[in-house]
Length: 80
Image (cartoon, rainbow, N blue to C red; front, top):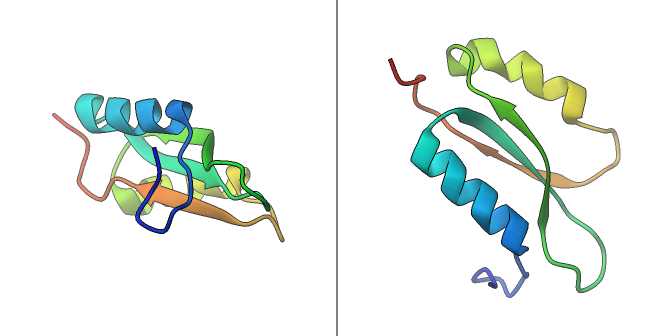
């Protein structure tokens, strides 16, 4: 699969995103960006535990200085 930009997306990332949308229990998916023609791939995910503001600090452990990434975030509150 390729995004509109032409950047490839790994099958693992596609499945992780689909699962996060379906189950609604994933707050963040960290997507690594590598040089070259490698597709984007999931490196970490963080489960929903509370509100977005309360969950945001959980993401900090997965971010690295000078390592480019995208973070996909679920903005709504956890299912009740």
